[in-house]
Image (tube, rainbow, N blue to C red; front, side, top):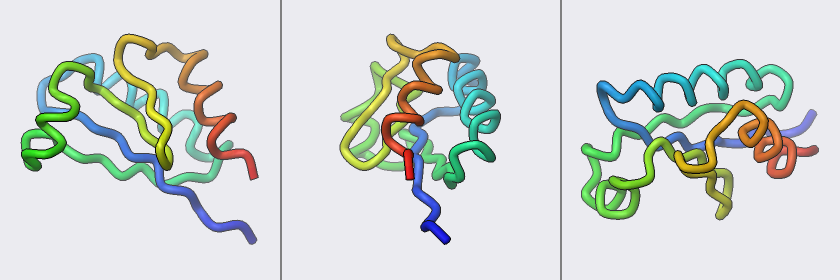
Amino acid sequence: MRKTKMVYFYTKHNCKLCEEAKQMLQIFQSEYNFTIVEQNIYQDERLLESYFLTIPVIRVDDDELTAEDLSFVTVENFLAKNLKG
């Protein structure tokens, strides 16, 4: 049995694009077997400084997908690349 990977999802409240990105992650969750670790950037000064212009951000290990590159296809490709078993 392989270990479940963590997919970090940086977000904020009242963000329509963030809600859409989370829905995309949830669609792929059973296929790629990962746990979503959602973090509000306004609850961590370091995250706010790093991501306030780029949220939502999806991160696996050291690889990130930012809002400017976000689509159903790019999310699937990102997860496939980073989570293959």
